[in-house]
Length: 74
Length: 74
Ligand SMILES: [Zn+2]
Ligand SMILES: [Zn+2]
Ligand SMILES: [Zn+2]
Ligand SMILES: [Zn+2]
Image (cartoon, rainbow over all chains, first blue to last red; front, side, top):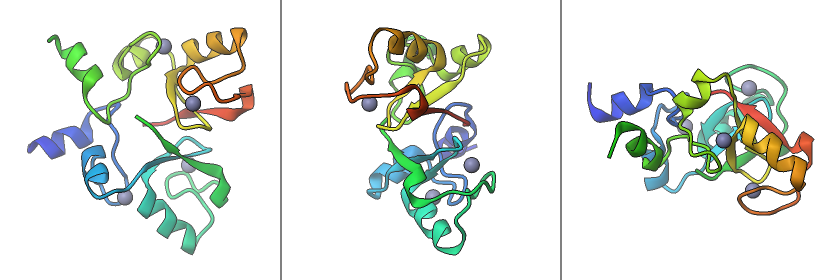
């Protein structure tokens, strides 16, 4: 495994389940880590794009309005 | 550095800034990772205890009501 792959599969580490980017890849490209009210974590770009198609959480499919997620500061 | 100390200082990894426990230590003791509306992360036990003393986020001191944080599923 490359270090990126290892990092993605480490419990407790942050990655986006849509683009699979790690925390450091998000930071390098100026994205934020965001968390939904239902407790799921994404990069800011993937969640924004997903909500254009459907107002549901991409992970658990609960209804998710644009004011029901927030950046995480880690 | 021990592996626990390394993990605590890795950007993008999860730890509680109050008790300093890592994600795996939280899980082993049955705690949850929680995130506040202001984007700060704690273990469920430390945040619960902190809110008994003051209804503010321990990290940024913004007002924080008990319904303004939620578990994170990582
Ligand atoms: Zn993403
Ligand atoms: Zn969700
Ligand atoms: Zn704690
Ligand atoms: Zn805060």
